[in-house]
Structure formats: C-alpha cells, structure tokens
Image (cartoon, rainbow, N blue to C red; front, top):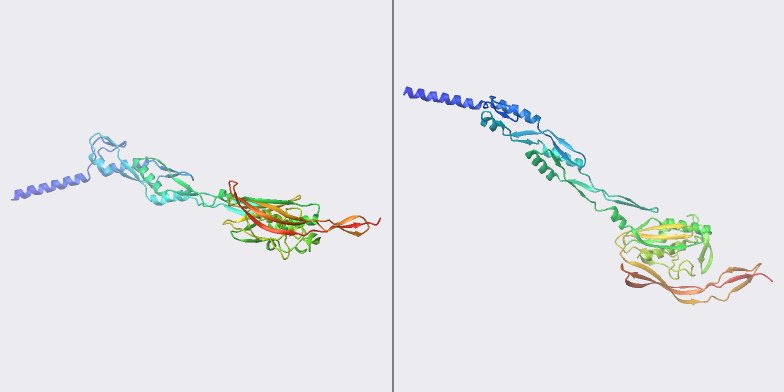
Length: 406
C-alpha cells in the first residue's frame, strides 16, 4: 500500500514538472522567424523579439484623397506567433502570419472624410437696372465613409499599403445655367425721338430709368404711374410738348407717354396681360394707331405677369432710341401685334389768321378710327390665336396758319 502511494506521488511530481516545463518552454534549436533567430529562446521572449522586428518593419497605410494624402502608422499587430514558436521544429525558417489592427479607425477615418467633404451652394442671381449678375453654383462633395472603412480593413488584412477615398459630387438644385434660362430674352421694343429736343429727351431718360430693373413676380400687376411717380418739376421732369384737350401744347413731362407706349408694346410682345391702357386723343407718329398708351394723372398703363415665373424689365435710352426688354423663362409662344386702320377722317379746312409773317401755327392732322390685335404663334411658328387689344378713335386737327399782310 505504501509502495503504491509512493509511485502515485512520484507521477504527480513528474506531471507537475512537465506542465511547468511546457509553460516556460523553449523554441526548438536553429529556428528563425521572419529573419529573427529565436532558437532556444523561451516562448514569450521569442514572441517579443519577433514582434519588435515586425512592428518596426510594418508598412504605413496611405489614404489618397482630393484634399491630400493621409498616412496612418499607429497600428497594433495580430499574429500567429504563440502557435508558431511552440510548433517550430529544429532548423526551420518561418514567417509569421500578421494582420495590422487599426485602433480608433472610425474616428480617424471620419476625420479624413470631413477634410474632403464640401457643402454645396446654389447659384445666385442679382438683378438691377444694370442687368443680370450671376454667381456660379458649387457642387457638394460627399465622402463614402462605409466604402472607405471596407477598403481600409481589407487593405490591412491582406497587407496592402494604399487605398483611395471614394467621393462623389451632388449638384445643387439651382445652377447658373438654370438661372440664365429663367432670365432669357422674351421681347424687346424700341421707338425713336428727336434727341435735339433736350427737355423731352431728359423726360424720356428719367421715366425709363424708374422702370429699368423692375421685377414682376408671378401674377403681380405692374402700374406705370406707381413705378414712375408723378411727373412734376419737383421730381425732375421738364416742360415739353404734350397733348392736352385734343391739342398739342406745352406741359411738364412731355415725352413720358412715349416711354409708356414703348413699354406697352414690349409688354404685349412678352405675353403680359394688359389690364389698363388708353389711346391718345390725337394720333402719334412713333407707333401705329391703337398701339399707343397714354398716361396722365387720371390714366395709367397696367399689366399683369400671367406666368408662374418672374419677369424682369430693362430699359435703354441711347442716341435717338428708347427701348424696353423683357426677360424670363418664357412660355414657348411668340407674340406679335397688328394695327388696322378702319377709317380716316379729313381734317377741317385750314384756318388762317393775320400775322407778321407766313408761318404754320398748327399742322393739320387727319382723324383715324383703328383697332389693334395680339397674334400668338407656337414654338414651331404655327398660328394659335388673334385677339382684339383695343378699338380707338383719334380726332382730326384743323390746321392753323399765320399769314403776313401783302
């Protein structure tokens, strides 16, 4: 019995010694791992020696991106050294299987994305009497964070040293091109005047400048009198020829009706809906009958923008010409005007008065009955409609002549 106990105790001691020897065992003689001689080293010592070399020689990872490259070197190492040192045989030359581990990868890669991402910006439009100014749009730059993480982790796993950040651009809702389409020419109309008549020219220039740079929003009504203001000397208007009570006479603001008439025709050709207009009592020379627009304290020119887009108005007074132009997206239609004379009335017989010399005091002028039409064509030039604009009558004027004594 005592003998059996002694044998058992001996076996336990030997087993304990065997287990302790394994835990602190040594690598087989003559073994090299990744160029490091570890033969005869204790396992833990061999692992440390090889890892020092592996960490020193571990390549960085470069992330190529539009804002510049980012180099990552702060990796930890995952390897199979614990198994390798314990299973190595005498004289073997081995290579460890390694994988770089990226601590705080989510945070560090997010920083890369933030440096390369950009907010987009819509194009902008500034409109004034000087015309249009545009600022170009900027695309948003978006980083594909999920793809970057996948690419980085795959590269670390297989030993690659480079990846490229995937970015893509998102255009803004409003581009410079879309703004230019929304401010394309819709119509233009011009009339001519005597530039030598300085007061009248200045009145035309002043009234036109009040209108140039006006924006009419969708379904908004434009009022000439509201925009231009009262034609008074205090407001800068000068005395020139006007039509009053059926005769040509001197008055403040002469020439302003030519501005309203030019604007009226440009508005018609732009497709505006005329809500108020009135003819002169006498026919005028710068537009055909029934296409004039007389304005006064009691008479206005008004029209509505019928479209779902804003309309912009510019004017130009240069030399002997006054011109109005309308801009906007357009509806694809072409608008033309037509004047039709229905009847002409001869003026009364001239009146002669005695004077110092032979002279014309007032030229005779025939009376006219007329009407005007708005004709609409589609984008292909096909006729769409013909609508009456106005039906008018203009009074005849008796000529008055001064006759000198014989």
